[in-house]
Length: 93
Image 1 (cartoon, rainbow, N blue to C red):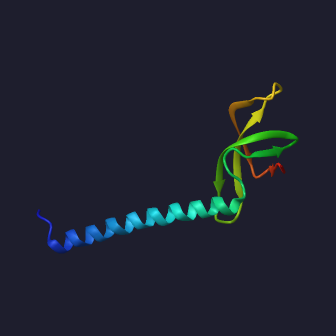
Image 2: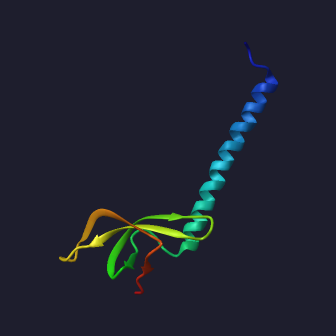
Image 3: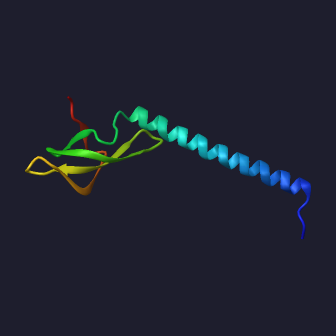
C-alpha cells in the first residue's frame, strides 16, 4: 500500500519532534552535570578513601551518583570501577 502525502508529512513531523526531544534531553543532562558540582577526573572521598571520578549519574530529584577509581598504595589510580552512589564528598583543593 502506497503512503499518502499527508502520511509522509506526519511521519516527517514526528521525526523532527523526536530529533528535537533528543536534543533537549541532552541539554537537560548537561545542565544537571553543571549543577552537580562534580565532573569526571575530580577527586572525591568516600569512607576515608580517595577516588578519581570515572562516571557521574544525575537524577531529576537532585541526587548525584558517582563511580570512581580508588587510589592505590603506590599513589597511582586503579582501573576497577567502584560504585560510590551518593556516599561521597568532593575533596577540597
